[in-house]
Length: 287
Length: 300
Image (cartoon, rainbow over all chains, first blue to last red):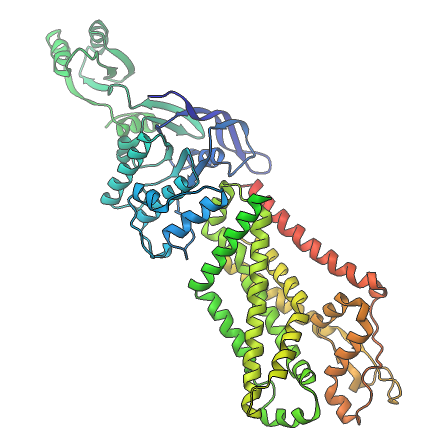
């Protein structure tokens, strides 16, 4: 996979209010590689939408540096298009403004949107989301920023959107997505950035082998030693639990069997998910 | 420059599509048409007037005040929607992300409003002509051409009103607020207009300044028109007042209506003085709109 960064954000600080008392983003740095999807996760008010606004150029009163390769297009939380135009008219409007010759049929096929004279005001949320992506493609955007793209979509429409995003990634389109839907983010993301009160408080690379979480009744220190001896990488330790990336040569059952045979009382082993990451980062524990 | 022209063309095209598909623009045209048949005077009264005065006098005298007032109201209300609608829908956000310039964005709306308002006014004139024609028994083309002249003479007023509406629209983020503000502004204009009486007297008529019958109410919009035509100020003013006082003249035995003195503030005492306020007003409005859009962009 190419490692060129399409979006680079360096030490961004964004404040609101006349005296800059409200800090929306506090020294955030991140990069998004070409043809990948990086997701922003965090509770409400964490600074996800503000960061998207900064990257999209909607706001320019901030400290730090944003570098974007080529054009970016934003799909806001509430999908926005010209209501009294159909899909073709909408994307032709934008392509004309930026002076691009496009084939509307080709673009609409890519986003699985049927051609027709139906005006946008009568579109479903799923169709509007697809049109947002079509608009970005008509603008020739190399990167697409999406704010809560799965919000209000039914499972079928969400699946459709996941497929579209993944297929566009293969064509080299880069995505920076903010969402609360951790399940869908797992399907599309290469990296996940966890934000809390405007700061990056966690980073998860979903391209590396899944991290395992093991729970122990006792002997967790011994367990950690044994795991390291087996070539596993400990990523986190908690009360009665260890997060580790297993040695790729070993099967999970081999690792667990080795622990048990050495006297470690293992009560559970499972893959670390975005959901467990989220609860660990924001609530400080796992259920 | 090329980008601006493309943006302008796209924006114009967008508004024409909106005209075809949105309900609000056809409703506006219907309102224009309704003005055309508004019963300013019953037809039987009009038929007496037909024999006394030429068509341009009839059109101006019977039609002009109400016509202008309604144009102002409609243009103000509709233009007050144009930018706030984009802000409310969020389309302005998208336009900003593609770095569309404010120049084509504002100009396209302004031109669209001008075309729409003049076209709507012509609809009014056409319906009005049909209304008169129904009494005369033939298509009164003289009334139609006089109406077109009237509309064109007020195109500056329409343009200025559209600018006012757009400025209001740029300030508010929701359509309902901008429409309410435009309505409030219109009420303010009417209120100001009602208080702007100009004392005049007719030379040789024997009446003195301040005689109750000659305290003529000159609508604010007429004053603006006079300001915009300084070279023909006396002629325009006399003609204007003369036509407005047509009934008074009739009652007064047809006293000459073209020798009238109007007292205006000192500011307007030179030809330059008439143009400057208009230019300053226009420049202020455009600047205010410009700054508003800049500030909105800057502080988001």
